[in-house]
Amino acid sequence: MSDERIVYKVCGQDEWAAAVEAGRYDGSADDRRDGFIHFSTAGQLAGTLARHFRDRPDLVLIAFESASLGPALKWEPSRGGALFPHLYGPLDPSLAQQPVSLSLGADGTPHLPASFNTTRS
Image 1 (cartoon, rainbow, N blue to C red):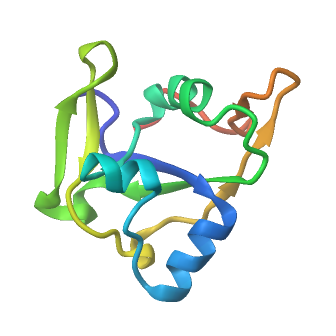
Image 2 (cartoon, rainbow, N blue to C red):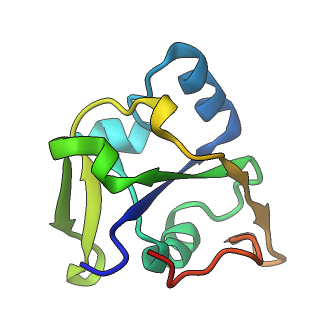
């Protein structure tokens, strides 16, 4: 597992605002269907955005220290056999670093901010 110190959640701005207000995030409809909250590492983000978030202009990217999520964070094979971080339980929004709004490219794919380095750990 490379670049695992920080993990990222992508969700709608309103969805995240509601989680912050409630003090708890139980995940998106897809997360609840799958039984865990989906995260990505920095190196996995571009693929996650292109595959699952195309044409969503309302997105935020939220970073978390993986260690702060405790033993409920599991690394499991997913896309192409790569290990992805999955959180089995609710997420405490107070553990989040400052959310970053994502903009859409001309093709509808959300773009990471220019300052974002996909090799950071």
